[in-house]
Structure formats: C-alpha cells, structure tokens
Image (cartoon, rainbow, N blue to C red; front, side, top):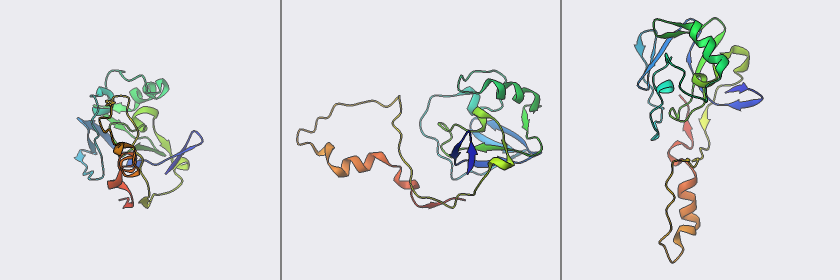
Length: 163
C-alpha cells in the first residue's frame, strides 16, 4: 500500500532500485527474466501501446503525467527502464485499467506505508465501453437483490491472500 497524492493506493512493487524493467505485450521482464504473475487480471480493453509495451518510445497516452514522460526518457536505456536509487516501480493487478507507475512514475520508499495481506473486497466498476442492454425481463427479476449482487463485485477476488 502506498500513499500517493494524499490517497492510499494498493499496488505491487515490481521494480526495485537498480532493476532493469521492460513490458512487452503485457508481459513484465525484470533484469532479463520474465516474471510469473498469476495474480494479474487482464480484463478486456482496447490495446494501449504505452502501457502494453513499456517504456514506450512515443508519448501516446494522455493519462500519462508529462513530467513523468520527460523523466522516463532519461531513465530508459536500451529499451529498459532502469529504476534509480530509493525509487520503486509499482503495477496494479488489474493491468489493463490500472493507474500505476506507468502513468504517474516511480515511488519513493517513504510513500510505501504497508504490505497488503488479503483482498477483503473488490468492486466491479462500470466501464464506459460496457454495452447497456434494455431489460426484457417483464417480471422484474433483474431488479432482485440476487441479480444486483452478482454484478457489483469481483467475487473471485474477495478474501484472497495477497502474494
């Protein structure tokens, strides 16, 4: 868990000081070795050249902090991000939709305040790309509690131990 801009975020430390990091087609390589990430979720999303292949050579994502983009250029060597001293590279588990170090940069050690133990709840966020369908259920079953409960949480993640 880290404190970022007066908010608490839960992200994974993927890059330590001195690590060489590269993401190719969503797969993370650290110091030349592909890392196993069984905890990562790839929800359907349109391709994002900046996040899917990091560090990118071209600034294509308006969600990326421009100051971070400038700094990233000086930290990239031979297509890899070299994590500087006292900094950490963070990634979210919901990789396609995570706002993480790819967007806002590296994190100082002081901003890391805790280590998560368990995912106690995980909400499903409606996406702007979700197709809204008209209900054809004349009896109103789609308004019942069970139907509403099924769609508002990511049930497979709840009460999972964080590795």
